[in-house]
Image (cartoon, rainbow, N blue to C red; front, side, top):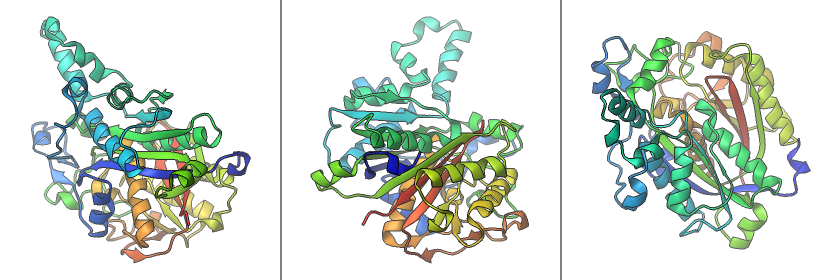
Length: 409
C-alpha cells in the first residue's frame, strides 16, 4: 500500500535512548560523529574458554533509583532500560506523563536471560519456594511491554512484537501503520535488550561472533571491512513517540522526522542467512509504500552487523535497488549490535545527524571488502544535506524491515 492511501501523515516527535554511551538520545550522534567506539573487553567471557570472542558493548552507571520501587522490583535490566528511554521520549515529545490514549509497541529478542537463569537455578536447586512473585514478571516474553505499561499508566493498545534483531524497527513500522490508518492516535515504539554472555555464545556457535580483535576491542566491530569477523553483542533501548502530523502541529512541538514508508518480508531460503533477493524485495516494498523511486533516496543506513555473509548480501541488495551512488553507512562499528534496540537506536542517531547535516562514517571501515565494494561507503564523516533516507534492519530468523524517513521542513 502507498502512504498516499492513508489519511494521516505520521511524524516522530519524541526520542529516548539508553545506549552503551549512556542514557540520553543526544549521546548517540555526539559520540558517533567523534568516532568513539563503546566496545570493551569482557571479563565474563574469559571464564568461558570455549568462546573465542571476548568483547561486548555494554552499559554502565545508569541510575534507575528514581523509578518507583514497586515497579522496579518487577523489572529486569531490559525493562529498566526501557523505562529510562520512555521517560526521555515522552519528555522530548512535550509530555510529563503518557497521554491517556497512548499505544505501546515494544519488544525484545527474548525475555531477560539473567532472570531466566536465576529462575531455573532455584528450580534445579530445590529452592523454588524462594522464588518471588516479581520474578515471574521479569521472564514473560512480553515483560518489557507489561512493565512499561504499568510504570507509565499506558492504557492504549499494547503490542509486544518480537522479531529478533529487527524488533525495534518492526515496532516503529507497525506503529507508523497504526497511526497512519487511524487504528491508534499515537504510540511509543521501539526495542530493548540486555546483554548476557549467552548472547555472545549463541553467535559463537554459529561462527558469527567477533574473535580476532580481543586485544583491540574498539576495532572489533567493522561492518563491510575485509577483516571483519563477526558481531559484537551489545544492549540498550531506543524509543520513539509517533503521532499524526495534524496532532503535532496542533501541539506545536518539534518534529524529528516524518515516516513515509515501511517494508517488511520474510526470508525463507535460510533461517540464518539473508539473501540479496529478499533484502532487495524488502527495500522495494518500502519504496512502493512511500510512492518513491530509488532515485528519491539520499542515504541508506544499513543493518550491516560485521558478519561475513550478511554484509555482502546487504551490499548486493542495495546495489541492485539503488545502484552504486547513494551513500551508505552502518553505525554498528560504533556501538556493536544492540539486538532488539538496534533499529530504533540507530534511527535516533540518524535523525540527529540529519538535523545537523553531519553524518558519521562507518567506523573501522579501513579496507572495503571487494564483495561489498559495489556501494558508496561513507568512509569519512561527511557534511550532507539529506532529505530522505532508508533505515534497514534484518533479523536472524528471516524478518526483514526497511523504514523510509523524510526530513520535515
